[in-house]
Amino acid sequence: MTEPDKQEPETAQLVRSYVITNGRNLPGEDQFSLITLVTASADHQQRPARLSPEEQKLLEMCVGGYLSVAEIAGHTQLPLGVVKILLAALSEGGYLITRPPVERAPLATMEILEEVLNGLRTKFG
Amino acid sequence: MGSAPSLGEQAYVQQGETQTAVKILVVGHFAVGKTTFIGSISEITPLSTEETMTRAGESIDDLKGVQGKTTTTVAMDFGRLTVSERIVLYLFGTPGQLRFVQMWEDMARGALGALVLVDPERLADSFTVIDLIEQYGLDYAIAVNHFDGTSIRDERALREALDLLDDTPIVTCDARDERSSAAALITLVRYLQDRAR
Picture 1 (cartoon, rainbow over the protein chains, first blue to last red):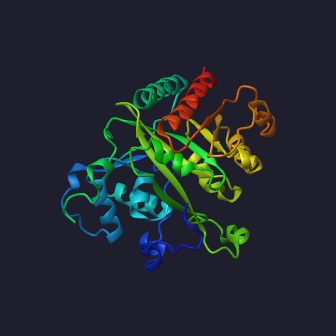
Picture 2: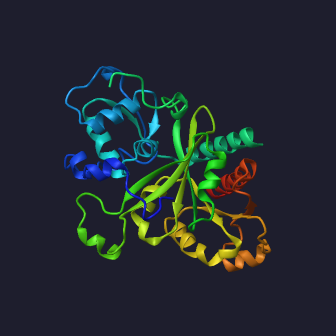
Picture 3: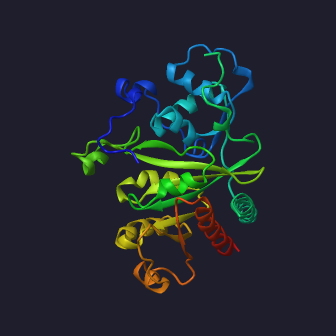
């Protein structure tokens, strides 16, 4: 937990959120949930032009593999809403691949629970 | 830019191109041991992120209830566990205060279920949390975090005090111990299986 009195991360303090996001609104929840997995698309490994410093930082982070939206927010220390907006912009620009969690049918849920159970038993049994 | 990614290899989801991400909530009142619990079984050092309490485009009237507060953000802690080649499990630690409702919607959407951590000495503090979980329609199990020196009430008294259904599982655990934490999660998942049938 963050202490209520603790200072906010440097970025948030120096630059207002609406400057970082360029005034854009939050993307739909379907596109960027907490556990949507994100990575940089292979076409854009070279230095992309005209990205903000924050967008560049996020993209750089995403080059190494898949991370969830929550993890990207955790690593960057940017507020979740800001991260979602930046990711949406990068995604629109073709810089990112996103994998939202699948809509679960009842059968799929049973399969998922079985695998989670087996995984926990294997790792910690 | 143009250099190596800024995080180590271990930070990334192991098989992200094929894995499905799922989540389980670990909820409970302040200082009940959520972060400890998550840290005991997470394969990454637990991360924390902040959700602002108002969102772009929403009325600033929403701030009325929090006037005088020193902050308008709330932190949530989370961890990750690769459970199979196909599934990566995220555990989100969620504070139980009603004023974090926006965050609860994000958290609860699509969650498999919730583990409610309970301090036997502070049962009343868990009422709000359990209300919220039920309000969002999540199935849950109770894990009594057994701190050193605290007594464990007998199960029937606990069930009565928390007004639980007869089939809601109750386990005791030591959130600092990975096997104990995992056992509590296993109890929850088995219950979720029963509920899904």
